[in-house]
Length: 239
Image (cartoon, rainbow, N blue to C red; front, side, top):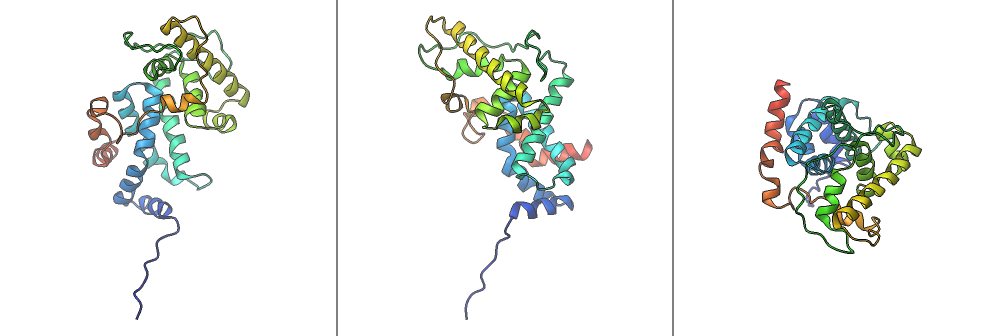
């Protein structure tokens, strides 16, 4: 007599989504745990601020919970969550009325600045991780979004255009301008006469933010509260 062989679902994530739609909080908790690091990483790159990224991560999953019924399976669930998180971040910046470059062509628009420490180390002839992250943090929000999506996350211009509701031409133009601004910032901070090193392809390796599990404890202090599914569900219950 042979033992029965358990057959795993062909798409366990689809099963989790179906259960979550029926109100199964354990299923949503599994989805949350599977995708929280990716969403947090995006929010941290977008904001350059740990506390703000934590809040955005929680807000993004509240939107995922509320919009789950709109997921049709036309793309990967991770891609859909990423879009929801990106839209949540963009809405956050609009609500704060930050001065940012529009996704339309506005080369003379004022730049949003982030207050950053100036005493970082400087490396001649190389792209220093800290200086580069700070340079990205100084980009206007529109430039930063496109730069991160393209050069860090690997999205193509057509996908970026769909995500951010802009033209492919604007995506390409703002990526080019973002790279120029980063290069100028690195040159200014390093105070070197020679050209700054090329940003691609090394930029992805240099600036990719560590996932939550890999990051130093002091860098992510207090994250457990926000990235707890229990806290998330409690907030959603009273929202």
